[in-house]
Length: 380
Image 1 (tube, rainbow, N blue to C red):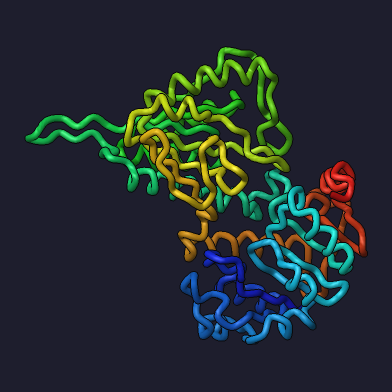
Image 2: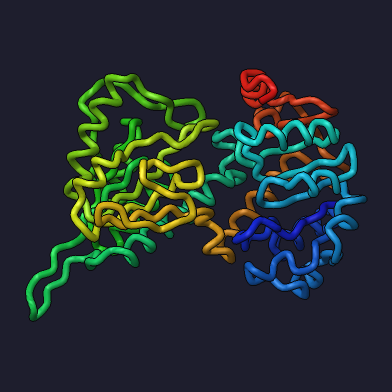
């Protein structure tokens, strides 16, 4: 089976889907791996390393995809990239199928079997394939570094001849993978860290990284399917807003990370909350790519509103491309070994991982949630 690795074309994307170490293991298993020339340059993996690992280097994307059994990339494919793939081939990438309806329809029309790495179920067996968790780890880490760089204060407490410097107060909203990594990183840097999440079950995890868990005094759990958060009741949202507002007013840094699958990021930080923060405080909105958790976030921009620096980063994992590519590649490798061998893809719909990740096949949308969302959209 021939696998093609494309060079990413989205502006600012420095990752590559497979690194040479993974290529070496795939080739050893009998796969033929072709890589577009320069695909790994931005991440620090040069063509010579791929050739040494056993890859075939191809300069043209269209030539690369034309005879490939599977095309692998990081970002969702462009319309041109979909058209480059031969009918009946397999495409594996982040797809965002709940939001990119036109891409899903085009994949089906092209009769491609498309696997979305971002819908792989979060079950124990799939942990080694969980791209979202890998990339969220990087996003949480980097968000704290950006906050420290933008803040007008030190993070740690310092005892100096000029007096004692109090530690920065950091509030993390959302204690998923990104939030927990943000908590751990801020704590290692010496900050006093608090974290809020709608899921009481994560309290122990928050405390394990040295942060204090902030709880809403309402007996309602936000635990949704697959470990994600679900939307809460109006009563919960009201009390949540009051609690967050009280803690934000005292925070030097706020890092919101809350996402709900298939929807715009929920607004958790209002303009009034930003106004209550001290001048020079910082908000780093990890959810910026999906609209942001802060009402004043401008995706891809850093702005100052009411004296508060609001950072809306896009694609944080790509700012650490070497390790991000290594982690992404390992996830892909494990996924490939699960759903395919050198003879082809198994397409076992009884398998939970295959069923959870396969979006289109044989000209149809076969993923239950994606199909439901497309039908609700009514062709819009």
